[in-house]
Image (cartoon, rainbow, N blue to C red):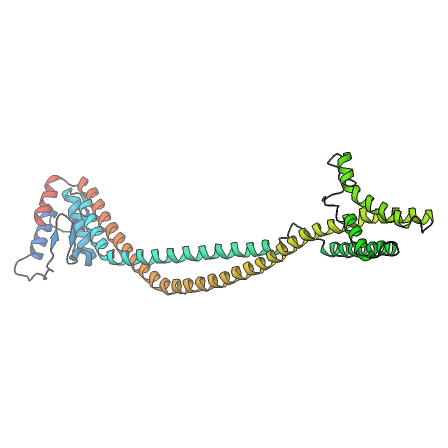
Length: 361
């Protein structure tokens, strides 16, 4: 019979036929009989207790036997002792039991956290690379070239220039012995004196002055008049004037067309080269990003495999810790329950009865 069961008999009706029998004396007699020195006592485990740390080196009996723990709660309740002393010992004991498990769990959780971090980082990198690939593929080069049109215009200008040269040569062949060389000189003088980038006829930003006009039309006009003077005597006036006007405007427009197309051709070739280089860079960057994506996916698979290897062991350790903590909480609740009941019974007992029970204990 436990101490608490004996305590409850004090409040049960007297079933003896003897009038005036003291239940306390019966309890004392029974208890003395149980604790008689003639009966062998059960061997108790040797326990080393450290008062400062409140940690047991060997598991105490009251942690193994729930009835003994209940008796401890009753004794603490009747004696008015602080229950935190016993509960702190229970917590310290189980804290010692779970210390190794807690350390391993912490290490495994840190490892999983690190793996999750690397997985998330690689997934974000994959998303960035995929977004960059889409952006680069949809990116268009701003500069536009007109190489076909420029080359066609350049060929037309060259054809017109050659035609103008042969026209001048034919007009001067009967006037000079070395007409071919003279015709070439007249042609070059009329054609390549147009060194300005934009003709005054097309430039709306700059004001046209007489010097600029003379600079642009002086040599073409002089070359045309020279050709006119050579054919004036041998050709009708209408034909001569027609040749003058035709050669002059060929100098003016074909020369500008030739030189202008050469300048535009340079710009178009530059844009064309940049466009091709940009396309090559686009292909190269896309290939590099796709290679990185494959590498990141391989790393993610590796990290997930490592994570799957850790999770079963971690789950087992957490279950073990949960089991020990549940056992700890159960023992604390048992002790506190018996302690509170003993405190309640203590208020209903007289000091004499408490002293007699304590003496029996």
